[in-house]
Image (cartoon, rainbow over all chains, first blue to last red; front, side, top):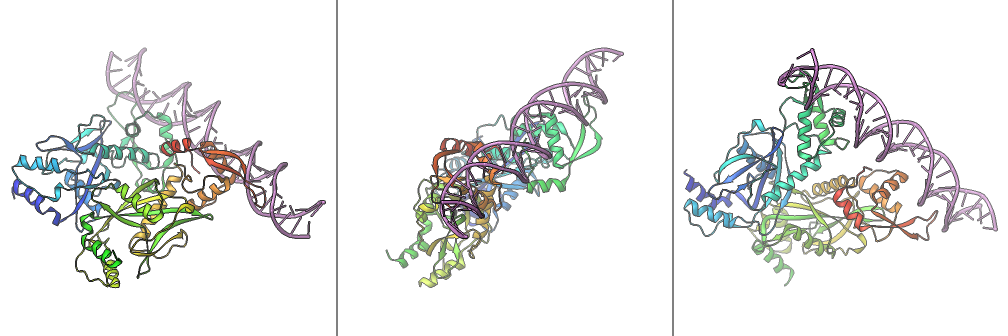
Length: 256
Length: 256
DNA sequence: TATCATTGCGTTAATATGACACAATGATAA
DNA sequence: TTATCATTGTGTCATATTAACGCAATGATA
């Protein structure tokens, strides 16, 4: 099926397989070179950026829809995702955007379920930057990691959605461990601390941070030291998955 | 308009004014005689209980829909409500329940938007028990406060929705003040503590509780003592709304 | 071989927390 | 009229937690 007919079919008949008025938007966080990143898509023609999103199949749980979208945009499977907020301003419609898109493709259409109002559910995920292969969807010409501190202009209320996800991430940081999905298998204490500092957007005391993290027992110290670094070489750690998961449920028992 | 034609119209044409596949369910907490209560509706004919719920108008924000439903079931206005979770199991459909309901009313109907799958957004509210006038909707023959510890059987996944709201309430308790909507204008320290104990479902040390609550400065001690009580009469307090709201945003800075 | 930014491990003072003591109160019972 | 007693207001104290900071070890680089 060629591009044009695929688009036509989606706009004409999509409502036969998807729930109307409902969408999912994903805020996918990654961490690279001490910078927090978010995966965004650049719309064809318009060039504006958006969160990876999609629709819910008529017989699909919303969580599954979010995971399906994540898989399609990153190749990743089995990632923990969670809904964080519903966005339902009555004006949430991509009618103009979609109509302009269709004109650019060369399609004329008066009516479509895609022109109607959409209520969207925000989902967030923390993923391993190095394992992701960003893939665009048919409405986009690029899928890229963007720095959280230098975000491009975004479509609709997507910036608000992203900010809400980030805020929720900061709040959770005090009560749940983080990093298992964001860091490589083995990592150093300074790397873990940088992750926390990046998300919280403030400096933490190196020594106190280490003491508290160690106390949670979510880390396992490895008998291995990072090599080829200037100055004193830091030790490697990895997560103790059993305790990590326990802490995910029960909380950390401290504040940073 | 009589009952039968109102029902017929809703099932036949409701989708012209409401968004399909989407509903709102409200968990409305109250506090009375030291017991945490939830407002429930009893379905006509079936007799089973459900959360007060409703649908979203095509040009209405979901938050507004939740407030409209709250107003209709309690008479209350200007109450702080917040969404806490989306429930989207593909099997969430009231088809059988609704068909049985229609048969009982004496209506035959093959197709209706009300038979389709519904994704529902849970909203919670804390309200002043004494100000509520429970009102049933057209599908219910009663609207009543139910003890949180003696809940009747509930429709669909409404029990799960309620439990999720309660859990969220418990979690929030440590980080945000509570009571402004649940207690009368002036109240005593033991009353406030009972509220906390009820929600948390555990005993708290009387003296430590007072020390911590006072430290947050959300309370104003009144120059008035409760009268006509056996034993030593407790002092009255009221909330310092300015500091209360500050703590709502910034957190309490302690754990109980 | 000296320098120096960085890491690992430790100390201390201030603060917060949990557990408990005791006097004051005032309706109720003797 | 007086003693009783459950309950409230206030305070103490040992312990745990936190923030702030010291110092030696490391190892690439100058």
